Image (tube, rainbow, N blue to C red; front, side):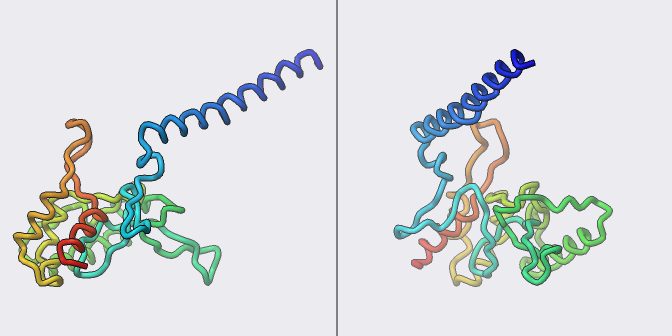
Length: 201
């Protein structure tokens, strides 16, 4: 038995060192050398301070900003540790709602969102990504259609011509990755920062 125990222990230590230390450190160093910004979290800085990441959405709620997708992430309820409360774009608790098509609460939430968006911009079809959550709850992007849908509201709130905002959105559209993967998209944080620049804030 001791003769079998020693090789097993040596193998365990060797594999732990190789796969748990050497490999992760090598990949982290390689990523930092080749893609330093991405390896550091794709952080966006403004005036010397970090305002967010291109990879994690933020909850913009003001009428003068473009809004992202709904987020189903939650956080512990401060009043009751056994319960949770909505906490949009909570990166510490990335998840979808896991509610299915027969869920009454999901149907009610979507109906309320559709009614609010329909009142905001009457007579226009509402892009589906403005009423559906992503699997992570942290999606930083929306479709170009979803951004353009919000132009009239943002233009009214900022007292800007809609044409200028449409041009701003068009300038922020990112194409498919490698020309093949995914769909054209607009990063909401980048768009709102460009909007503040346009408005002189």
